[in-house]
Image (cartoon, rainbow, N blue to C red):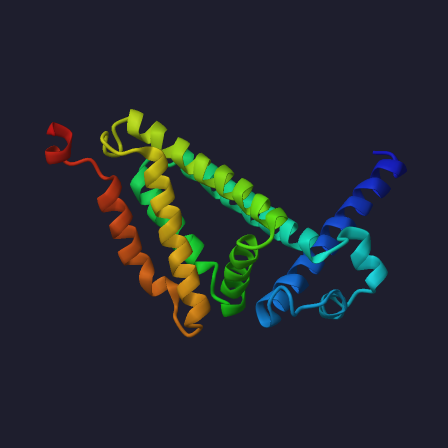
Length: 210
């Protein structure tokens, strides 16, 4: 490997780490102070980086929100891709729900989630970003359910798209609850959430013969 390639790789890794560092700081500030109250200087201070460094990667708070949403989208799609190869789709979806809820241990993370949704209600650019995220992730889940339906693994009379939206809404609601009640441990809800989703998706003789 040439020195130029090594240097380029190292530079890319440093840039990726800087982006992660800045996004983590932005999430802390947005969760603590809200999107509008948080300032770029506060985010710079939280990240421990100079304003010049931060602005090299993100020009505005809207850019930071876009990157946070994209980061969440990539993680969600990666998880759904891993579920696609599971031998038991119902168990895999249940495990995915538990994994998602387990990831929201910090009330600040839940607050950021709610904050981005609130900003989407009044900021057209953020609304478009969030809609793209929702369409991408919900569409991928609907495709996963449609394929499982074709294999007879979930109820044949379900609309996969609507089922995917209900699952997404359940998760959204629980994360919002965490933001409103910080002491709540979302993992306490995981078994019941899994049971509800399995009951929704599972084929039954009665439904099959209807």
